[in-house]
Image 1 (cartoon, rainbow, N blue to C red):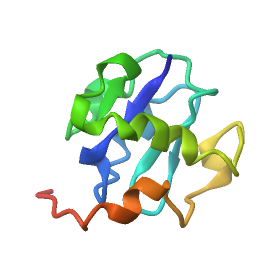
Image 2: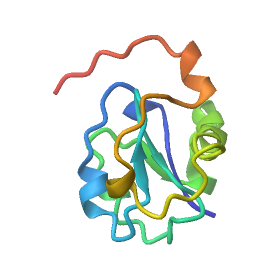
Image 3: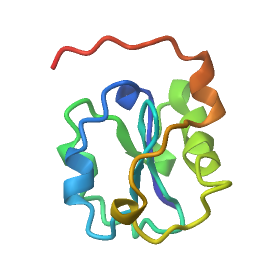
Image 4: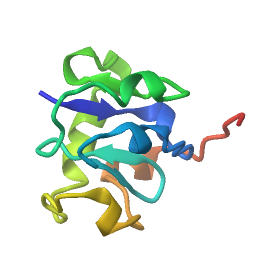
Length: 108
């Protein structure tokens, strides 16, 4: 089990979760953030700080966003387990699911 970042993060990338994560397992893609499932220690520190409530425990992802659980894992198919988002830096790609998601407007 792991935490999943879902649709509300798309085109927002607030990054408060990154600051809270004790194991640096939240990586930045082109349009959203992703949790590396093998590096996540299920501490839950990220969930309450997300301003748009985009982070869910895997079993609690709302039905309409279930695809984001697979998308979080898919993001790491080529990256593997880099062992820390900070040293890797932002990536310029996203999971394939996002290709079908129109640009999101957010009130900051």
